[in-house]
Amino acid sequence: MRLLANENVPLAAVRVLREAGWDVVAVSECAPSISDVDVLGLARAQKRLVATFDRDYGELIYARGHLPPCGLIYFRVVPRHPEEPATWLLEMARQALPLEGNFTIFSGWEHVRQRRLPSL
Image (cartoon, rainbow, N blue to C red; front, side, top):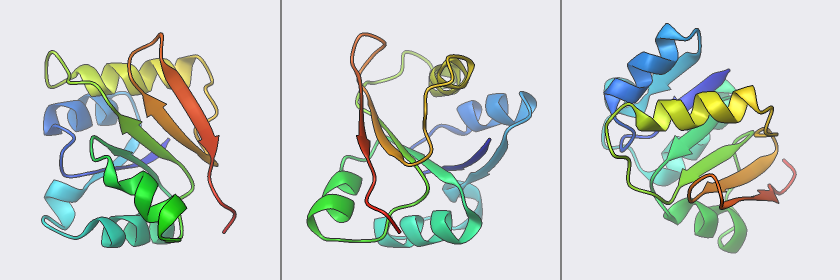
């Protein structure tokens, strides 16, 4: 899995995903403080899904018309510990949740919603 972890995704979660064999780039390591629009561009250029706790991406993509990445996962819950976002992502992959091409909103396992991303 190729993932771009937004700056608000804990590095502890990034490490867990890397140890599980995921190809993860962390914004906090490679481009701290870049704008959300630049995060989208970086993800598109590198063909990565975006994982974030930032709610602005839906507006950027659907209301403002910015080009989406190949997939986006928005976490609407506060993790109990820094590794928990990795646990959520690993379980999504295990369940074969279709992340590519979708805007996935994770509000807990009982509340996972998906919306198709606009075509590039």
